[in-house]
Each structure stands twice: as C-alpha cells, then as structure tokens.
Image 1 (cartoon, rainbow, N blue to C red):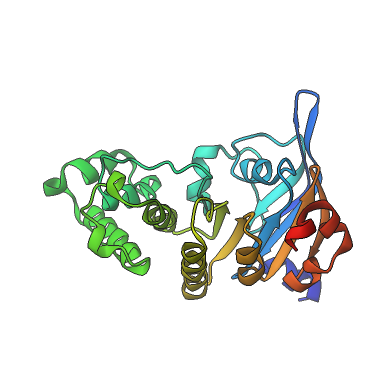
Image 2: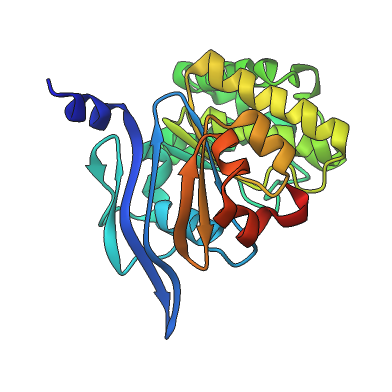
Length: 263
C-alpha cells in the first residue's frame, strides 16, 4: 500500500472544498478539513469565520452546495441529519440541550436512541419491562457515567446539576452513541479557568482511553493550544492556515486575523 493510501485510511473525517451558501451569502468557500484517527483537531477562527457552519454541514443540518464530506471514506451526501449518529458522528452544541426533568442516566441514554428503535420509550419509562438488550444499554450508559466521573449522579434530575456538570453530562450523552468522531462546539464556554483545565483533562483522557477522534471548536486559546494535536484556522469562510499549535502561534496571518493581542 502506498504512503498516500495509508494516509487516506487514517482519516476519520475528510471534507474537501466544501462550500455553503445562504441566499446570496457565502458562509463557506472551498473549505477543507480532515481529522485523523485518535487525534484532537482544533477548528478556530474569529466570530463569523464559518466554524459552526462547517459542523452543521458535517452533520447534515445544512446542505453544502459543492465539495464532499466523507466519514471513514464513506460519502455523506444523501445522508439525513437523523442518520448521522448511526453513521458514527456525535456532537455537542454551544447551547446545552438537556432534559432537565429527566435523570442524568436518562439523558445519557438518549445518546443511544438510534439503537433502540420503537423500544426506546419502554427503555426509559417502563424499566420493569426492559428486555435484556435494553438492560445492557442502561448498563453501558452507567459505564459512560463512571468514565466521566458522574456515576453517583445518575439518579439526579439533570436540571439540578451545576453548569459544568451539565457540560460533562452532555459529553457522556455523546459518548453513549459510541461515535467514531466527536464534534465539540465551544465546550468551554461559560466555564471558569479552573473548570476549563479540568474539562480539558477529561476530554484528553476520553480521547486516549477510546482512541477517539475529536474536532474541537473553541475560543479559549489556552485550551486549544494545550489540547490539540493539530489546528485548522478559518477566516471569512475560507481556510487560512493549518499546523501544530506552535506553528499556529507563530503564523503571522493567524495572529493578524484572530489571535492578535490574545496570542
């Protein structure tokens, strides 16, 4: 096998020349993003650079007008947004989408809803009638909660958790889907400096334990630079730069467009 073929196999997510247009506004123009197996790749840029638009395109929440996106070499064209979790892409959002009146465990089990089909309501609301496969799913959700240090909170109402714990629960819910790649959209937003450090350690530990690929959108540069193996920079809906954290820190175009005094 050629070196180029080996490189292709290692790519979990590969987007080539993706463009997204809303009416007459070009949100993305020929954007290319790749994420290798087991790496944390940062996707950064100023507000309006197109970062969340790219995640929306990759999860089929918006249509892209040209280009291609592949997951494990399989094209995503024609795949609906509801099918993405089953394809192996799990995602968190800037705004938490938790069900406050449900327990932490029930929220995490929602992440695996694509495996239940018509049995999901029974698995959540009628535990006495749960079949063996559904009991197994519940046990797996508990294992995920243990992985993120929340097993003792399984029976708590999700709405009663502190904001950092709700963020952690959202990660657990995404992991319950057993994804090939995890897309994190500004997961450190609203966290204190100490909470950001703790959250970064959690994400890195998950990556190492699961050999999970992660695409991270984040404005907290300390977290990005310490956590990411590679960084892709977008500016005005286009690729601006790509490299290691040290390369991005010293890139004049990036400093001018985004980092500025924060560098």
